[in-house]
Image (cartoon, rainbow, N blue to C red; front, top):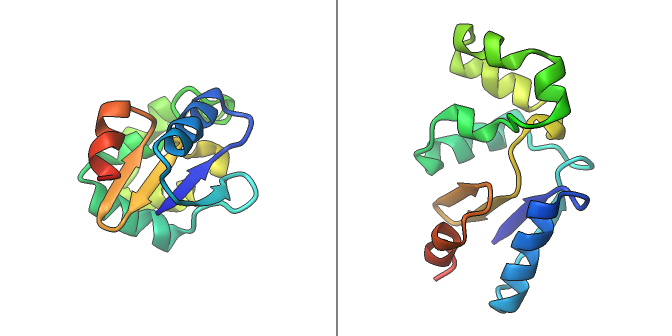
Length: 116
């Protein structure tokens, strides 16, 4: 299982504490230090079944400063994935990858299902 987070993010800290409390073994990856690649994002997006917008950190400073709320609707999926791959701070976190299951953000109920 791969747990991708930003160590200073309170939601990531909460998710990591939850994983630890469940004795789940995982590999941790700092999204700022090791940004997901285009290929990884494309694969995760395909497995997740989520809309691509769910992979964007819409509450982040970078998202707002780049005015992506207005720009994303006019971009192709490929362009959006390439943009996400440029900076980990654009990517919603935490991300949990467990085989074919990919979750963005931390919702305890969804994570319960993913770690079974």
